[in-house]
Amino acid sequence: MRRLALAPLLWLGAAHAGATIAPVEQAANDYREHCLSCHGANRFGAAGPALLPESLSRIKPDEIRRVIRDGRPASQMTGYAKVFTPAQIDGLADYLQQPPATPPTWSNDDIRGSHSMLVDVGKLPGTAQHGADPLNLFVVVEAGDHHISILDGDRFEVLARFASHFAVHGGPKFSPDGRFVYVASRDGWVSLYDLHNLKLIAEVRAGLNTRNLAVSKDGRWVLVGNYLPGNLVVLDARDLSLVKTIPATGLDGTASRVSAVYSAPPRDSFIVALKDVKEVWELSWAGTPDFVPRRIQAGDVLDDFSFSPDYKQLLATSRKAKGGQVIDLDSGKVVTDIPLPGMPHLGSGTYWKRNGEWVFATPNISKGLISVIDFKTWRLIKEIPTLGPGFFMRSHVNSRYAWSDVFFGPDNDAIHLIDKQTLEIAHTLRPMPGKTAAHIEFTRDGRYLLLSIWATDGALIVYDSNTLAEIKRIPMNKPSGKYNVGNKIEFVEGTSH
Ligand code: DHE
Image (cartoon, rainbow, N blue to C red; front, side, top):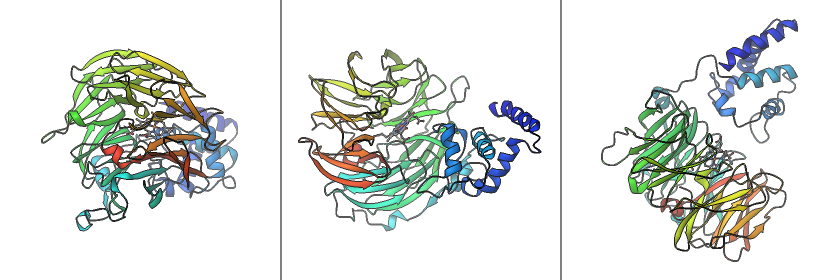
């Protein structure tokens, strides 16, 4: 719609300027001549990332223009300042933010066509070949140059590093024994990696724009949630071959995007939140699953979500309602709304026991405060003011503190340590002044933790979680999330699911 409205306006502008070709056509020609070989015929991506509105929505228009003009350091994207006039750069940036003339599709055949099996797993040793504790490895996402590093969590040394697809987002998920890790990129690619043999096994493109993935507790299925096309994709966890696609269509026929998918191990099911219809879906993996969703009516459209520790209830953010909503998964009823004033990145919150009761805590993305909520009464226990809005909060059963970042604003180099019992800020660290400090993950025993310095010349900093002494700095390129195999497969308290 937007494109149809814009095209005549651009054309009119060009006609007045006496141009012989409409700017939209000019941009399409420029794309074909200079961008297509890397970014694909339909802007679906190839060696370079997809350039569809869904893929670019998180980037400001000025930044898009800047990248076309100056390129991206440490990538194959060179600058086009000497090739394009400023008007051509503006035209191209506008063009890329409009939907393509033909609506993009990604069919089952496209998924199957993208699948590649790189190694025959059956021929690889079934035990860890690297000498490190397989349950204390960390999978580290280096967002700066789109790589993944595998780190020995005892010696804090990198065992392997490999290129990922563009913009890995969300937590990688593991097979129940911790041998395999599944990674999703925003561009829709899913990769399967063998941590015992440090080898990439298989890859498939499950969609054009993906939210995240989940793995069933029995290790048989991978469920991928997509924005584009709005659907769920079930893959065989052994080799990522396609099992089924399920359009994210509401009961009334409205097409939706998928907000997030998680596995709920005690329920033997995947839980799915939909972005454009007021429904939550539960898909059982028990027995011989048909993956037909059980539909639960939500009070609002839901974004990211988390669970109560027993997985009986779901706690979701709702951008429209500017707050949170609790849904009982057994009865399928909305329990209550909860005050989450700053739209938290909910899956990245954490929970612990305080005075014998479970509490949930999360920073807020648009307000400098941490919300602490009682899991039994759903009442707000406290709002802890922080130095700025944050993204991630993490703890461990053996840690006195929950660590919470200040992702946004002038104090983004600070990290708060919240005392889990008093709910006061016990310490504020500034690990590398002037550089964003964010996202924590503990070793399996909780004795140490890894913190990211979120910069291209960044690092992972290893702390002793009791003395808070710095143990080691490992240089890395914008390390974003890091995930401890043992903590993730045991779904331990304090870890994201
Ligand atoms: Fe995330 C997890 C949604 C922006 C880094 N983020 C998740 C998950 C969801 C989500 C649903 C849980 C997936 C999982 O673990 O399986 N993220 C969203 C958004 O809706 C939001 C606000 C906007 C968007 O367009 O996606 C958003 N996220 C970001 C970022 O800007 C971050 C900081 C940088 C980036 O990589 O894009 C970011 N998100 C992360 C990370 C996780 C994550 C590192 C995994 C956290 C964990 O420890 O498990």
